[in-house]
Amino acid sequence: MGFKKLNDKPLDGKTLNQISIEFNISKKMFFGNDGCNQVFGSFSLSKDKIKFKNISSTMMMCENMEIPTLYIKLLEKSRFYKIEDLVLYLLDEDKTIILEFLKVD
Image 1 (cartoon, rainbow, N blue to C red):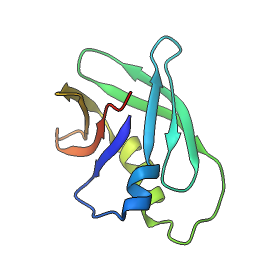
Image 2 (image 1 turned 30 degrees about the vertical axis):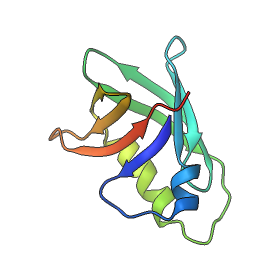
Image 3 (image 1 turned 90 degrees about the vertical axis):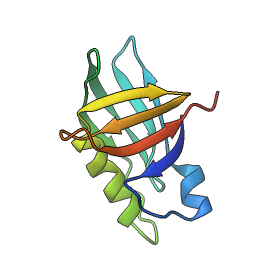
Image 4 (image 1 turned 90 degrees about the horizontal axis):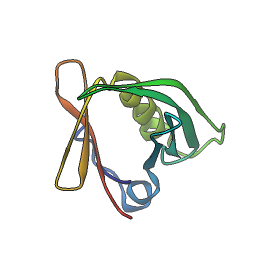
């Protein structure tokens, strides 16, 4: 899934194009990119709830680590999800949208 929005934070085009997430539902695993590093881990899923677990990443150092750090924190804060018009919304415990991804394949 291609990245669409990060907690109302403006992103440059390069970072925007690098951020992604993909899910392997049968294995309950995810992987993607935080704008600098490859990220991966597991997740649990129910009707409208999602919880990311064991989030890890490669350890490259990029010029600006603010966005990659925020991305990981927002994955950790995600508790709910909804899908509308090919967009995956991840929401926090207050059901505020914190991440948005657009289906690209």
